[in-house]
Length: 167
Image 1: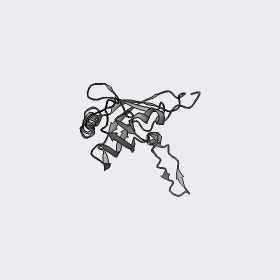
Image 2: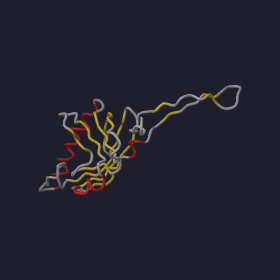
Image 3: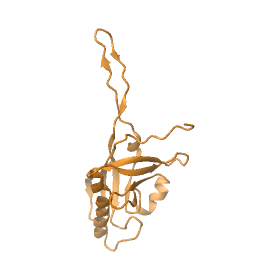
Image 4: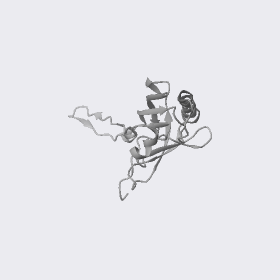
């Protein structure tokens, strides 16, 4: 898993500023990886038109984009740390990697959203700055040295949508 991250995802990356020490934590590295980020770019729009009493149909009202709540497929290994340095015991490594995530991303996001940047796989797209919060991991598949789970994410500002070319 860890050595294939650049080859599989190209330049696509999500970088979060740690709520613990302002360091930058990537969500695709040698120790853990968000397997699919498409869910971050699907706007959740609420449109509630009003019934038109005495008339057919309804009165059109503008929609509102809501915060985005989604869960992304996520894998974490204990084979190495985020920089690719191998652990001698992958069970201990998994524990250390999990502790890093909790300390830097999950606990700090309880107090508010963290700053983040999304870089698309499209090299012509500008990076998108946004705010992010993390929920409690849902861990349906786990072994002593690797987790396959779902990472709940909240984007208070809504979906990540790139600017149209020429805008």
